[in-house]
Amino acid sequence: MFLASLMGWGLFKEVSRMWLRISPDMDFYLDTDLQGATDRTRDYDVQEYEKVVYDAFVERLKKAFPEGDFKIYNFEFGTAREKLLKTA
Image 1 (tube, rainbow, N blue to C red):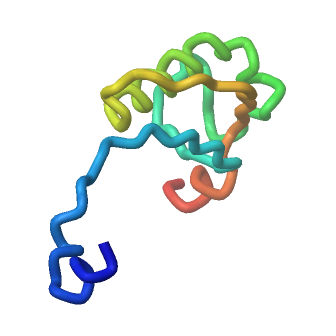
Image 2 (cartoon, helix red, strand yellow; image 1 turned 30 degrees about the vertical axis):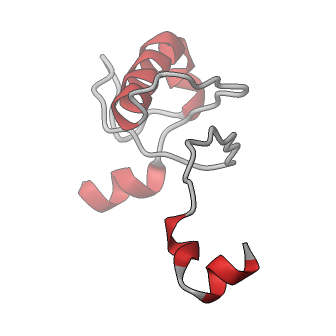
């Protein structure tokens, strides 16, 4: 193999598909309509929409990762006050 590398044959190495586990700790912004929510709505007030927000988040993930093989270990959400202030 050393001789093959010297002669440039190393460019023809076999490439195999690899599954990777990626576990980021990230924040995402999701622009969605919640009934009754305003720019004055508190984090506590939107917790009743957890299923709606979770389902919207999963749909976005499915579009980004069409393999669909992902697992969410922790899910928290609240209002993005900094985004609301910029658009008001």
